[in-house]
Length: 120
Image (cartoon, rainbow, N blue to C red):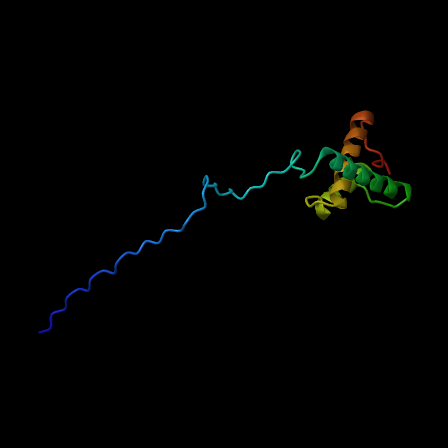
């Protein structure tokens, strides 16, 4: 009959890493802070981008581009909804057009009670 004896546990070796002198820095939670109201930039940059979006909307209107409109939304509202679904969630000219068209449609609706282009 053979008798087996259990093997001794391996020794625990602790290695310490030398640290630089000074306070210990906390790890970032992974979130980044952005300037402005979540826009990631200054107010001046945001205003310029929205103005360019408004200019693009005016150019579409001035050039006589036929835009099929949704009743009650008018031309500006339809462009705002289309721009939102075409990429209004990502930064760029399409988002600026979306914001500008939304502002213009809201302004026209409050001022006149209807949005220009909804009667065509």
